[in-house]
Image 1 (cartoon, rainbow, N blue to C red):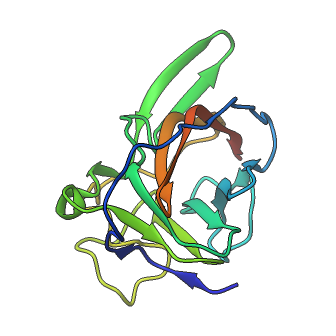
Image 2: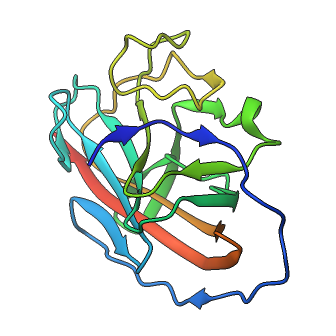
Length: 195
């Protein structure tokens, strides 16, 4: 399966359709959050500097947020609601029964694409990735940095030793042909440690 960036477009006129609601499920305390639907798979994971999925990092190690949406079907899908939340790739530190907001590697994302519908072609994957300390400004030759982030935070400190997590919830609304689909309140969560 080829990995490609977002493609834009809209195919056909919207007509009255039936919404399909799929109940969310959640996997917690694993190396990634993964959900499989009939049409789409979602994968939220952290990668080490070598591109391997991991939940353990060194104090001086940069790491990568990676979010994949995989279209399993033989038709393209067109998103009309996509990652509508403030906590996308946000890091929080856990100490006993207390949590502290640490930050995120960007201040805004998807800015230039706001008026477009997002398309994922048949049997294709949308990949959104950014490092905790991203290269600034965006350069296409830098690995693990999607162009979807229009304002990055280039001065994040490397995380000190501790227990952390990244967690976000989003609705996804999309069309496949003229049929509307909605995935409500899908939660993605990863616990990770820095030693």
